[in-house]
Length: 191
Image (tube, rainbow, N blue to C red):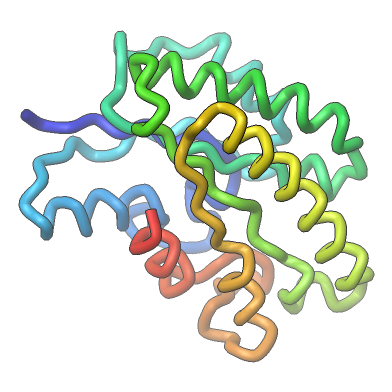
């Protein structure tokens, strides 16, 4: 059996500023192939800047396979960045998670939610309010974790590790904002 994997998200899923094959969905598949599991290339629906409602709109207009063996969902940083409310985020995130479960053929244990990394530690955020960013990311992650527990899906918390970028520049891509392929490798291993 060759497994299919659908990755839903934003810039952190496509891997803005790193080569396509070094983003975390591709690295996940590479690790699984090394472990002798047959996988198709990941199918990725993600775009830099997307909020939950923009991902929802893209999903609504997308022609999916009837089902996927595995689905990952990582979304919310742009909701925080644009000052959207956590109430709105919870509602839209929950809808996206329900959709993810349906796309995984109803198999909740085949869905993985990934926490939002903390870009407050990046060079990009120095001009802004890094503490406020970190606090708000924690609030949004509290929401996506609670919803994940409620729906009994897998939850991978990459946020504490993403904060290592504060003292390790090699974890940040050349744009000073997005994770490097080295950081994505850490995520892929956890997934």
